[in-house]
Each structure stands twice: as C-alpha cells, then as structure tokens.
Length: 334
Image 1 (cartoon, one colour):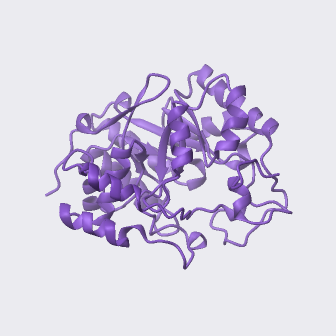
Image 2 (tube, one colour):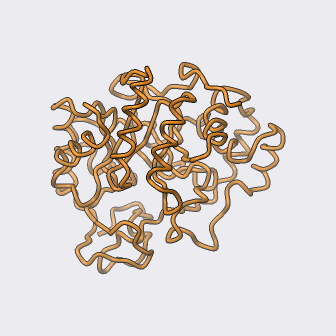
Image 3 (cartoon, helix red, strand yellow):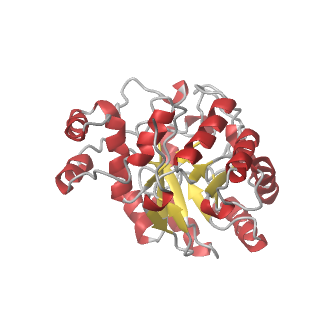
C-alpha cells in the first residue's frame, strides 16, 4: 500500500523573487512512449501522493488533459496556492508569447502560472515526433535582438499577473552573459539537462552565482527519451558501477540514487513516470536516508559530459553540427 508523503517535508527552493518551489517535481513529457491520457492520470496520482510541482509545456500536446487533472486535484481539496505549476512557450510562438501563455492557462484551467519558460533560446520549429534528421529551412542561429523581443513579452506576463516567475531553458553561459544585462526581470530558474553522467558543473555553478535556480530534466538519464535522441555511445546512468554500488548500500533502485544526488546537490529534478510505485519512491527518496558526503563525492566523479538531448532538429543551414547549439568554444555560434 502506497503512503502519501507530506509535501511540507519535501525540500524547498527559494527563488530570487522570494517565491518557494518544491525541490522535486513531476515532468509531463511522455516522449513517444506514453499516451496523453497516461500522463494526465500520472499527474493526478502524483498529487495524491504528495507531489506539488508539475512541469508542463505547450509543445507536449497534453495540457488540456492535464488541466482536467488539475481541476480534479483542486476539487479534492488541494488548494491552487499549494501547487507550483510551470509551462513553456514553444519555438513557433516567440513573437506571440502572451497569446501562447493564455492558451496554456486556458488548457490547464488556471488563472496564473508559477513559472513560465522560454523553451529554447531560438525560434527554430520542428514538427512533433519528427526524426533526428529533420531540418526546418527557416531555422537560424541565436539572435540577441530576437531573444530580447521574446523576453520582454515574458516580462509583460509578470506585469499582467498571468505568471509569477519567468525562466530560461536550454541556454548556455555565453547566451546568459549576452542577455542577462538587458533583462528588467531576471530569470528565476533555468531548465537544463542534468544527470550523473552530464552534470554541467560550469553552467550549474554559474546559475547559482546569478541566483537562478537550476531545474534538471532527464534526471535519471531518461531511458524513455525519443529514439532520435539515443546514441549507441550514450552512458546509461543507472548502470554506472559506482552508482549501482551506492544503490545497493541504500537498498534502492539506482534511479533513486540519481534523484537523491540531484536534490542534495541543489538542483530540482523533474522525473516522469506513469507507475505509482515509481513516482512514490521518487518523491519519498527526497525526505529520507540521504547520501553521505563520501557518496556525494563519488557521484560528482561520475560526470562523463554525456549530453542526451542534443537538439539537432533545431540546426540551421550552415551549422556544422549539434555542438553549434551549445556554444562549446565559449562564444555564441553564429
């Protein structure tokens, strides 16, 4: 019998606006593996067990069903202010941010969002479910001017009261250094790929130094990520021998260790599962049996710089490869 976890026991993150968010949440990207109904049902089940942070996005195509789940969650007695709900503007709506946010609010059956992200820092669109070789001829590299046009609309959402906090996603340090000086409202959070084999220490630490909360997707290595994002050379986080040994010492699945490490390190992981026993254990692991200092040191040594979500479908004509999206040499790639 699964037992709910008191949300008050879950670690909290203090954002630069003074708002608090839970230190772990549930993602709602079902990849190509689960139906929208599966995802919506998981959200409802997770809330019953104590989850209060839910990470949504318009491009996932399931916000209308998740909105029905949120209504039932609140009808059950959980108040809106107890929930922390986030969404994202998709790449094809960078010039229509306010309209996109209002659509998400309508679908999610909400009056406001706790956090709203720019999903990717450039308006390069691809069709849902496309393969890894897909390219849009209209794609182009990052533009400071165009990004700031989008960000000023994000700031307007805060002024309108539709959004409490705004954030970035899939950005690099060079891009942050480029746009932060021109922001009237600083990002409260940055959503980024974070798991034991891809710890992004430079970007992680830069975010903390800037007072920007790191939120980590693919926290257990995303074994159910789309096939286009899989490579035979990828590291399988939950099979790393050192991590497996730590899991044995705690008598838990290696995935649980990935989450313990993430929460104790200071990022906010957003794992996804449709199975009650998995998302119950994902939440419970944040409130009991922490990793030791020595185990945290071992986890820090597992970084292999193994990026899973390379974003190759967003490349523009003339780009050399997916590395151009991530400013590998420390400058913004044009």
